[in-house]
Length: 204
Image (tube, rainbow, N blue to C red; front, side, top):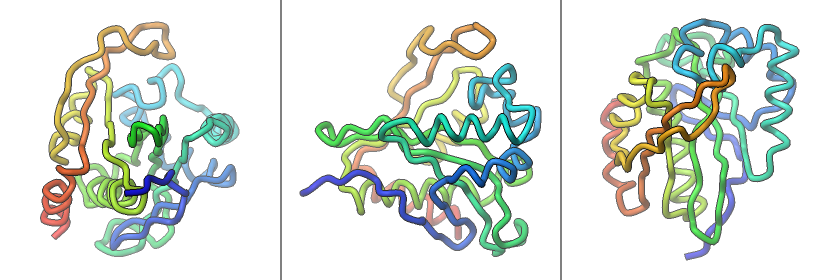
């Protein structure tokens, strides 16, 4: 089977729509993520790296957009399910660290407005992104990882059905100079049908 790079196409579900991020999304993303709780789990490097203006968020987006092989998505609501108005920006997620030779990609850099935590937003985002990786692109492995201190994120990843592979100790330096331990998970293409069924059941 041929393997293709994720192409940044719009990924549209019932509750969310993922569009390839553009710099013009900076103000809406800043407003959506400007919350102590979002950065407490060390999203984007933690509280010390939190953008304090929309302009600073634009700098973060510019760096992401210029990283080879990374595709950042802006998460918008469709207006269904009473979560908010159609087109409202509620978060971001990315695909990156792609290796076509090894048929793998990393799904990460994910943050959502706290008002959509525990709703259909994260499971549907993961459903759309994973379907794109495994079915459209033919990839064999999707890695997901998080800071060891972020127990909420670990619980969300485990609810997906991802397999916990281990902990990389003193792996990445946070913006405040401390080092994080990274908990690594993965989903393989042979596991995708079961994971997909679980996500669809949750959304139902």
